[in-house]
Image (cartoon, rainbow, N blue to C red; front, top):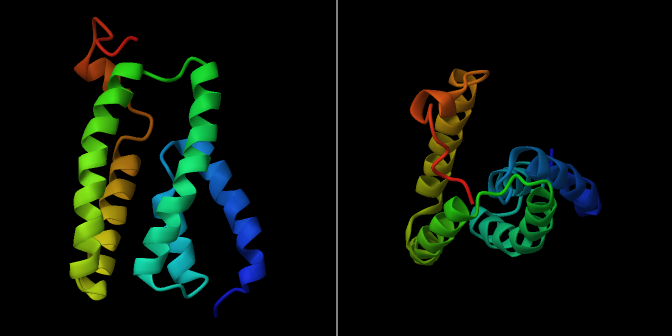
Length: 137
């Protein structure tokens, strides 16, 4: 069963809420939703996801920055390395077979989900950085 394209705005609203709650650009949600519910091919879903991430992430980032939740040093480090990864990934997505991309995406989701379950409720930050917050702005 594939959903009507007219339901995309509702799906976008739900993903926007998830992005704001959990952080990130929402690529996991967008790609999964577009391929699974709307039958959009994965290579197209990835491209659509990338295009939608810019405004949604910017809006969420501004809100979180105003709330004092943004660690600028961490953000700058991730932006620099993330840009290199995005450039490499955009070339790789064109040459890796779609079946392999889906397997990689599925494994990534499983690993991330397992990490969230395993570390649920545990204060990892205190364990690794007990005395000083080295990520302060």
